[in-house]
Image 1 (tube, rainbow, N blue to C red):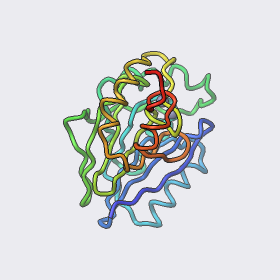
Image 2 (cartoon, rainbow, N blue to C red):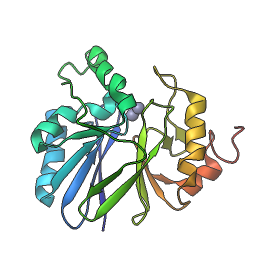
Image 3 (cartoon, rainbow, N blue to C red):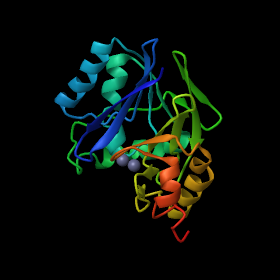
Length: 217
Ligand SMILES: [Zn+2]
Ligand SMILES: [Zn+2]
């Protein structure tokens, strides 16, 4: 049985997710931990549960999602998986980290590129992948059909969507990707976004002001 543990880290209130199953193998998505206490919170949970971390995965590489990359790679000796279009996004983080108040940010690099044709395997669990660009050029979302869950990063939020005014963001690309890719997922699937509370596909298909039935898109 797939389990999800969420943490909300850093001043951007970013959601970091840890997925694990009965084998105790686990993957970490978007570690936003920066302060010592945040890193300890993550580490303590992993130790307490006796988890064996297999991969570090970035849905995309904005600063709030990668602040803990270096810590996780070092602490658990795991490879970083991400889409190749995010290389430039990740590289640029060190150029603005100090201005955003994160002078101790440490750079990391991808160890393996993944895309929508790959799947992530750990323990008895398989995660499938969809390519949902627009908020970021190489944004991926990860879903599991048995547990009916999706790790959505900054694509679809409860009642909103990811901002597209950042460099390499594109509003229409995001709207199309959510409609054509995410809205093919089961209506009942729970969405775990990079910020804010959970939602599900069916609720957003109807109510989301940007991509729902009532939106003028
Ligand atoms: Zn983002
Ligand atoms: Zn974010």
